[in-house]
Image (tube, rainbow, N blue to C red; front, side):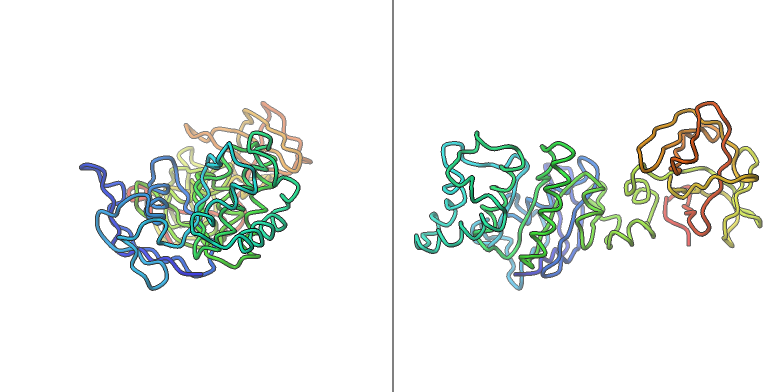
Length: 348
């Protein structure tokens, strides 16, 4: 297994810098997730690591080897694609064995590896079937099995769950995480789904416009976002942002309401509150009129306006909020975030 190191990496398409300049180290045995909105450069970055896109400037190391000029086959990586990329005319066994056959592995070794991977992924009964006879989740397991049999230094996953329904996506997500723990290998996973990033990653790289916004554990990204973009992207529903003026007593909203926020700063700022950090209070706090109620079973989402800003609070179902009624909300102690209104950087 191996680490992956990117130094001064730049990728340009024509005159456009997709990745202006990037430095990143992915540790050996680490499960790293690249996350960000469409067009942020995460898939391009993965394709660069795979050798499917050339580097404009900078260096890429897998282990101690500089691999800029090596072909994908020479990099000792395995990639699982979004569309699975299975050969339709081959059986599951043949799909999993094909890469080893191209490397002229011994027939007995191929059989041993394929059967071991099939047992690990619980697809032994499917080995004689063709892809057309498989469900989406089964095809995904076959694609993973094809990667596993190669025993690569690094596994790359390019949004492999996006074609699955919600229930199956959650199941396969767990299987990939369990696979990473069993194999103890380096894995790089690309997704636009922040829930996938939070539940799977050892560390997360949040990208925007080809620029790293923050690298950290899921807990660090959630609890101490570097800026407003990260804070708004991580968390579902996303963080509420309200313009405020900071003064001695806390953060004053545009309607005059004062929310207790501990800060020595003064002047304009943006107050960030996650939906789960609003708390119903008997008196004081923020008086809001409920515009929409979304029961989710374990909790309930309540929509309301604060001035011109639409906000969401996550409350316990026994609160039984009703559309049209007034609800008073406070903020859980120590859970408010403050951001610079110009740069978006989180204020300490």
